[in-house]
Amino acid sequence: MEINMYSLLSGAQEASGTVVIIDVYRAFTTASVAFSKGAKEIILVSEIEEAIALRENGTGDLCVGEVDGIKPIQFDMGNSPHELANGDVEGKILIQSTRAGTVGVNAAINADTIYAGSLVNAAATARSILASKPEIVSIVAMGSAGKYRTDEDEQCGFYIRNLLQGRKPNHNSVVDLVEASEESQKFSDPGLPHFHPNDKKWALSIDYFDFSISVNKENGLLIARPRYDA
Image (cartoon, rainbow, N blue to C red; front, side):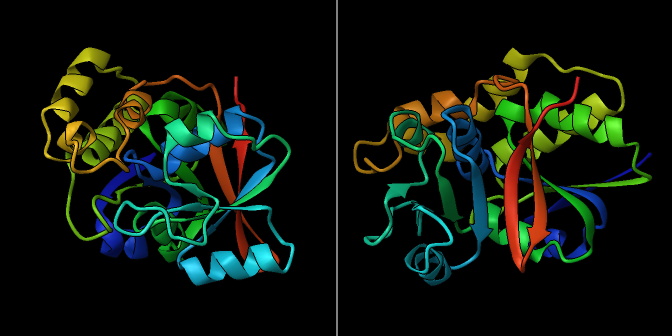
């Protein structure tokens, strides 16, 4: 298995084979929590206008996401695992738009298979990849807005790579590295109330969920669903 490491939007565009698009803070942690609460599927789109249009034509039920970390005024929920954990999403189709994770998934035009990765589903993502036995794996850390590298996404990428290669890093060491990062400080800043402290707790709950998130193109849309591999 050839494993290639990429970063940012340019990395998503270059990635090939089985592609893991990583967004720890917060898109794919939020998506994982939504699936754990019974969401049926999640449509991943780049632009908020597209998300709203899909909800209005009945393709999906709820718009979830952010611009600059803040819930758009016409959205139902923000890009917050804490909010999704306390929301009513059971049986619903969500439409998610964020500035990094969902943009990255849509940019991965050379991918054969796509997974939406974060620390909460890292081991499950590795299991799904190993079960499929791909020749090429591309791991993409999306960073902040797909423009700037961030520690949480880079560390998640290394973590998944190590799992694929038969090594398991120490959870506490990974958490300590991420906790010290610039991005992590947002969740304790009273001037940024849209970054809830519990969002960070969720995001750093390594391997909390036993499913990966598989993304497939159907009728022109990218649809995410949970996948379970023993």
